Every structure is written in C-alpha cells, then in structure tokens.
Length: 331
Image (cartoon, rainbow, N blue to C red):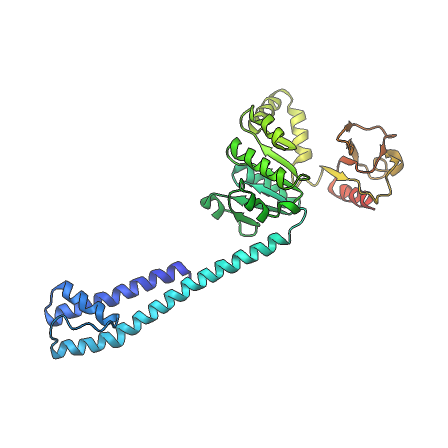
C-alpha cells in the first residue's frame, strides 16, 4: 500500500478507537464528553492516572474491553506508523546513495541546468542520440514531473557544490537554460571556474546578455526569441530552404540526417584528400563542411581538401551511411 494511504488509514483507525471509548463512557456512565474523552485517552495511553469518576460495574467491563481492543490497536497503529516513516527515510537515504553512485559513474556526460520548456526538448534530443546527461532542477514541482528513467537531481545549479555533485569535473559539456539571464550567468561563471575545458552553451533572453555570457566563459549563446523570429521570417520568405533544413536535422528521420563526426587520432584517413577516402563516391555521403582543430570552418570542401588530425566532419546522408563513416573515421 502507498505510504500516504497507510498513514491516512492509521489516523482514522486511531480516531475511531478514541470515538468508540468517548461514546462508550458517555453512554454507560452518563459523563460529559470531555470527561469521557479524557478517560479514553488516559486508558489508551496507559499513563496510569486516577479515574475521572468512580466507575460502575458496566463501566469497568467497558474499560476492560477498551484496554484489550483499544490499547492493542493503538500500539499496532503507532508501530506501523513508525515503520512507514522509518522505511520512507531509509528509502530516501538509499535513493540518494543510489543516485550518488550513478553520478559518480558518469564520465564525458552533459549537465542540463533547468527543465523548463527548452530543457524538455533538449533532454528528448539527448535521449534520441543516446548521449549521457544529467538534469539539475531547483523547483520541487518541476523536479517531480521529470521521468524517473531520466537521471536527475534537485538543487540550485548556480551553487558550486551542486555542480561538483553533478560531476562537472568529468563532464564534456553544460547547457544552462534557466529562466533568467542572471541565473544563467552565475552558472556559466561557476562552471567555467570548475572546469576550464568544459564546453558551455547558455540561453540568453535579452540582447545585452549575450556578450556578458561570452565574457563569463560561454562557448555558445543561444537566443530563442532571435532564432524563433528568424525562423518565422524565413518560413515566409524561403519556405523551401526551411523545409530542407528541418528535413535534414529532424530527429528520427531515417532518410536523411546531418551529423558531425570527429576524426580520431588513430584514423587511417588522416592526411588524405576527400576523394582518396571514398566518402563521396563509395559511401554517397555529402561533406557539408570541415571544422578544423583551430576552429576555422571550411564550407563545401573540394575533393582535394585534406583531412587533418583533430578535424570534425559535418556530413549529410542516410543513417546507415553515417554509421559507416563513423566506423571509417574511428579506424
């Protein structure tokens, strides 16, 4: 039974015993309600005070019944109540320990600060791509709505202790999508100080907040209102372009996907041109761009463009083809 239902049932059980005793003394001894209630309480609690009034023979018989049934019921109810509360505390303690062990086992994961409307979408995308992530949410009502299958912890992500508990030293990236720019700024400052190599993406609502977030240490700043406005305008002015981008980037699309693939140091395609690797001819994959290790982006690279160590390929193709490319790049 649910612990809350158990507590409610025990409460009504105790209340029923008290009412039984009070009504019984009032009916048998003709006492006032308060005297009957007092006599019932001292009998059930076995405190041993003197009787309120001298008891008649029927009253004594009723007291025997009340002691045999009521005291046993009270002890049972109190015992079960204590067990439920103790089990709840133990369950909560083990739950915290289990969560701590899971977090300690995380490595190269992503920390998502905030589970609002944007946070939900981000988590859904993370799940579909199989990326390890952890949610930090401060508001209890919002935290309670997070799916139990999703790794999450309740806390204030602007605090260093909470970020450390989330394993920020071992994380690959952090996404801050809290409701205010001030909170996002605090998170970025704290995260950058705790992990200088961390990739940080932050949300900005006001135009002036973007530069502050960059100065605080954010690698990328996203303004939902700005992007949303551009998207609406382009949907009217360039509908075919928008449809193509949505088609290429939509999750779950098996016909066409756009992915970025990091070239590993052990890859055999390092220092080879694109036409030598057979990425375009044999695999039928379109290399949209090559991001160099220095951060320079080479769009629409030529067939003679050489792949170097540390490059990231922005590729477009079917899911099966992209997996084959990942295997080729990782060899």
